[in-house]
Image (cartoon, rainbow, N blue to C red):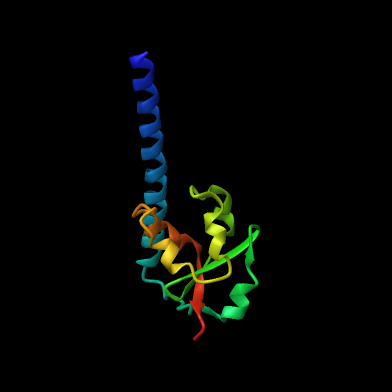
Length: 121
């Protein structure tokens, strides 16, 4: 029984390292593309008003504001470990909830995958 549990844990840990390795290689490839001598087009982030963001307040269309940055987290809603808590501030400022004690530090890196722009002031 202990051997089976050990094998399962080993498999899960291996899978975790493989997933992280893929993410890291993807990131490294992006960095290589950026470091080439080709000219880089500077793209300014789009700005959104609070009223625009407020329209995206549903499970299938969920934007949040975190520290004046706008994130489209629609694709993450179903995966959110806290269940529907992510919807508590859909279309609104989620800064306080995001920086709560329930989140592991990895969410601070993950959230950038969902970045779409800045809050218009």
